[in-house]
Amino acid sequence: MNLNIKKIAEYTSGTLYGDKDVIVTNGVIDSRKAEQGSLFIALKGENTDGHRFVETAFKAGAAAAMVQKGYSVAAEDRNVVAVDNTEKAMGDIAAGIIRERGNSLIKVAVTGSVGKTSTKDMIAFVLAQKYKTLKSKLNHNNELGLPLTVMGLEKEHQVLVAEMGMRGMGQIEYLTNIVKPDIAVITNIGVAHLELLGSRENILKAKLEVCKGMKADSTLVLNGDNDMLSQENIVRNILSEYGVSCPNIIYFGTEGNSDYKAENIHGSNYLLFTPSGEKFEIRLKVPGVHNVYNSMAAICVANSAGISVEDAVRTLSEFGKDVSRQKIIEMPWGYIIDDTYNAGPESMEASLSVLGEMKADLKIAALGDMLELGEMTEKSHSKVGMLAAKHADILLAVGHNSMLYYDVFSGEKKIHTNDSAAGANVLLPLIKEYICKGKRLAILVKGSNAMKMNIISEALIHFGV
Image 1 (cartoon, rainbow, N blue to C red):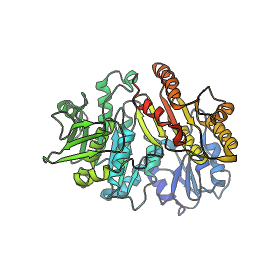
Image 2 (image 1 turned 180 degrees about the horizontal axis):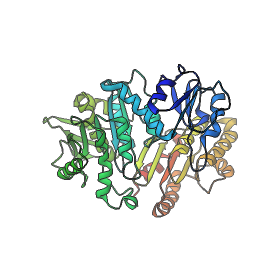
Image 3 (image 1 turned 60 degrees about the vertical axis):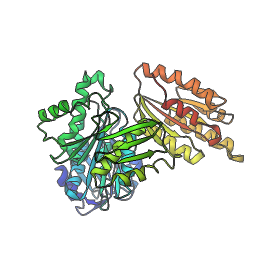
């Protein structure tokens, strides 16, 4: 970020106390993540008040804190910006950073009912081959996560790929007015948030709010196979209601109205036909027909950002080459963290931490044995079992050594099976039960390669409710 707090006070209309020339290099809302140069942002939540941890953040090295007016700082030598509302001020900082970057930054927004996280990752992968690219971490796609992502922008970054989620009307509008995207992608319109918004037409309107932050010469990339998005006249009518000058609309899919069209689909391999009449054979390393759509969206964005289709296709052939680390797959009912290639104590800890950060009603850790640990086997498995209890509600322990996870796990429910096939057979009916109750799930699947935990992750990916 590399901003002085005087500039932050300007962005937020805040009152500055302390040294106006102090530079902050990143923003954090968790005092445990504060370090030298951090701006600690104290948020007032329903269950806790971040102002309680201001001194903790300063002791960890934070250069400054942003607090709500009325909060008194313990020491006079602290650097503080006091604002009316710290959550809104986060958006003001992000908007200020974007505004000052001007045309030097290509901004891409990704939203949709399902698939936005994996589509974002694929888009960023392709764009990164030509541009220094920053993308939203994990599912940091809300009014807190998106500003934190923007605060990670460095001078060298040429592209921002921002995921945008929502829970109701007006939320994507808030995010898009921060980012002002040059290119926006809507992956699909599903039934998520139907209870809140009342109809899929309202979901479409909520997603199309992404265009409220776009200029007339911007590009909107849409899934032509989605029954709601494919009706261009309805899309343009909604944009007209919003007073938005219609952007350039590009469709991808398998139907006749698609500008970029997939044919001869076998798994995640297909033939791509472009608007210019070119034909490309696409062979992806990542499985599933959903990745056909994700890859087409990535190609549309790349081509709009000045990358040839040929170069984008070549780059996509390498996407997922390192499949061993934390593939986050968005499902209609939540997320799968597929980290099934291998496992050791450190990587288990890292993956459980990712699970802990996911936004879900229920978190499940499906963990297989860690092999080849020798005399550290018992201690390491016991430690992982205790970590799992901190980050997960339910444990599925798979394998002989995994009984050590099971014995120390103190969460809501725990299950043990001898192998991954049996684990899948137990897990699928369980998650169906929770999904039918309206629960949104996050499931981590991880274990040493020989445990074949991919059987569980693949069963989850292809699971239908």
